[in-house]
Amino acid sequence: MADLTYPVITGQDAYLDMVRRKRMYGGILIVLFIGLMASGFRLADARNAGGFFDGLHQVFDFPSEVIREAAAKSANLPGHLVTFLPSLIETLNIAAVSTLLGAMAGMVLALLSTRGLARWPRLIGVFRRSMDAMRAIPEIVIALVLIFILGTGPVPAMIAIALHTSGALGKLFSEVAENADLKPVEGLSSVGATWFQRMWLGVIPQVAPNWISYALLRFEINIRASAILGFVGSGGIGHDLKLAMQWGTGRYDEVVAIFLLLFIAIVIVDRVSDHFRNRLVKGA
Picture 1: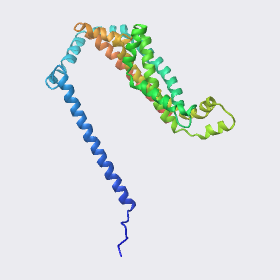
Picture 2: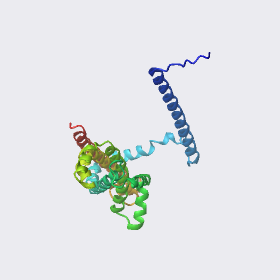
Picture 3: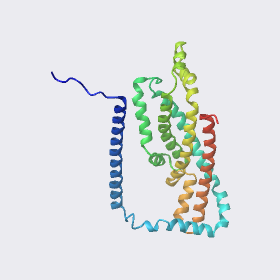
C-alpha cells in the first residue's frame, strides 16, 4: 500500500516560513528602491545644466557669501528684525486661519468618509477621492491659479493652504475615527439621536485629543508653506525674502534677519504645540 503519511507543520515552522517570506519581500523592495533612486538621479543629473559632482565643491559658496555680508553688517540685524516682524505676523496669521479652516473641513470629510460612521455610506468613495485630490495638488499650484483670479495678497495663500490641509487632516482624522468605540454611537442611535448628535456626543469626545494634536502639527507645517507661497506673490515674510534675495549682494543681511525670524518663530511654535500635544494625548 502507498504511504499516506503527511509532513507535520508546526507553529514554529510556519512562523519561520513567514519570516523568510517577509525578508525576501523586504529585500526585493529595497533593491527596487535603490534602483529607482539611482536611475532617477542619473536622469536628473543628465538633464541638469551642470553635473552634480562637478559643482559639488561650490555648494558652500553662496551661504558663506551671505554669512560674511551679514557678519559685516551685524549692527543692522536688530533693526531688520523689527522691520520684518509685521510680515512674520502676517505669515503666522495666514497659517493659523488656513489651519483652522482646513481642520474644520477635515473634520467633516473625515466623518463622512469613515466606515461605520458615514452619513451616506455609498458616498464614502467620493469623499475619500476628494481628499486624495486635495492632497495631490500642491499648495503653490492652487495659489498660482487663485492669484490669477483674485490677484496677489494673502487670501490666495490662505485658500490654497486650507484646501491642502483639508485633504491631509481629513485623511488623518478618518484613520483616528475608525478606531473609535462604536458603543456610545449605538446607544445614542437607540434613543433616536440624529447623525450630528451621534457624532458630536459619541465620536468627537473620543477623537478630539488626537485630532487637536494633528492640527497643531499641521500648523507648524503651514507656517513653512505660507512662507514659501510668499515667493509667488502671496504676501507675508516670504515675499520680503524673495525681494531681498533678488537684489543679491548688498541686502544679504536682510536675508539672514528673515531666516532668523522664521527660525525663532518655528522653534517657539514647535515647543508650544509639542507641550500641548503631550498634555492632550498623554495627559503629561
